[in-house]
Image (tube, rainbow, N blue to C red; front, side, top):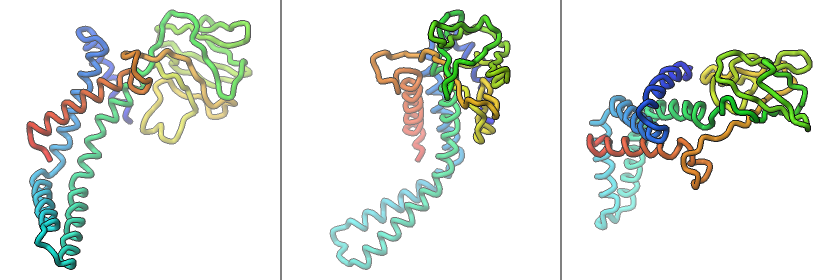
Length: 254
């Protein structure tokens, strides 16, 4: 379901790549996603109601901590009212906040799928392994692979939309467009794939192996940073933070 947007995003990103390098596109997509998330939240949330609830909460808390308040029963009444208002506020912002996360989640999945790794086309030596391990993989077209002296299988990725077929003991375990996206793991289909389809397809259900791993190189932008933020992640989420916070301040959205 989510994947239907990816061809559109890929097309836009391709045209952006004509004028912007990958680093600046990360920031652009972050800013764009933050703006979209802000718009969704601002439209779906009832700002006047939220503002009034926050005013009431502030008033109640001011009374709770008033030095002149020395009656425990009055304090308990105010505490219960504060709790009720807090839950009321949560109820008003919960759904808009959750829905505003959808564009962030969609773009993060797209980035993870297409830009966490890259396919070194027309270069030799991309190791492919299976779980559990086996050296009986037979991959067609044959020109895509070679073996070293220990039996390890290496791929020679080609910039092609042709299907790749993989056999084990003459049985097909995979047949799809292996190089359509730089996804390092190919697995059997899971129940959640009706929401998020795997762009490179799946291993057959009756296969004796349950995953293939292609050792694609990671797409690194900041070499000196930890792995978790040295790729697309840092600039993308900085862009979201800048746009969302700036718009909230400018338009005074609660």
